[in-house]
Every structure is written in C-alpha cells, then in structure tokens.
Image 1 (cartoon, rainbow, N blue to C red):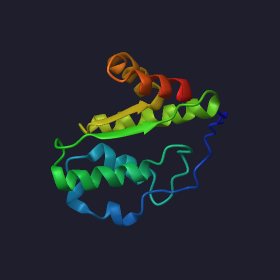
Image 2: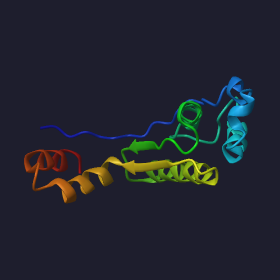
Image 3: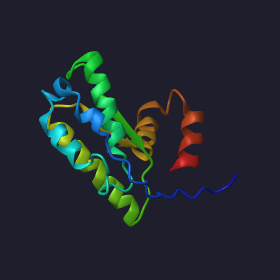
Length: 138
C-alpha cells in the first residue's frame, strides 16, 4: 500500500465567457444564476477551488435539453481538512444557494459521505468492496 496526500490547488482565473451571457432566452427562468454569472464573467477572481463557470455551462446545457425541472446536477468532491478544505466547502455552499434560488436541482456530496452511505446501505450485499473502499479512502 501507499499513502496519498490530497491537496487543493487554487484554480487559475476562469470565469464565464461573455458568449454564454449573450444567450438571451436561456436565462429567462434562472435570474439568480444570471446575476451570479455576471459576477464571474469574464474573469472569476472570487472562487479559488470550485469552478462555477463549468457548473453553469452544465446547467445551461441540461436546461436546454431537459427543461429546468428535468435534471439534477450532482457535484461529487473529495473533502480535505484545513482552511483550503473549508474554503472549498464554502464555495460549494454559495453556489448551491444560488442554484436553489432558481429551483435548480443541484446536489453536492463528498466522496467521504458517499462511501459512508454505501457502507451503511450496501455492507451486507457487497462487503468485500465496502471494506476495500472504506479502508482505502476513509
């Protein structure tokens, strides 16, 4: 076996390109996300670990294909201790709040939470796999 060190590295500024804000009708039923998007366009100097521009592009594409209530967007991430981990969690919480304001079904869960839930719900059926992932990742 070996040990892994998980480090959150700051992202380079990567805001939402103006062409997305020019999509007119795509924003009609998501005004909170539109206002948020304007704050991170064309550069995002606020978020250091979450890349909200990418999440916004996913929302726009899913909304176009399935309608506002026709999809759920899941953000799965690995939580780390310390100040950087806290900042990432705060950034996820901020984005989730904006999404909720427009009734966007955005969910976030950490790998740790997912593995713990799997261990509770699936232990009897998949005990070898659950043992492996809990020993390796928790």
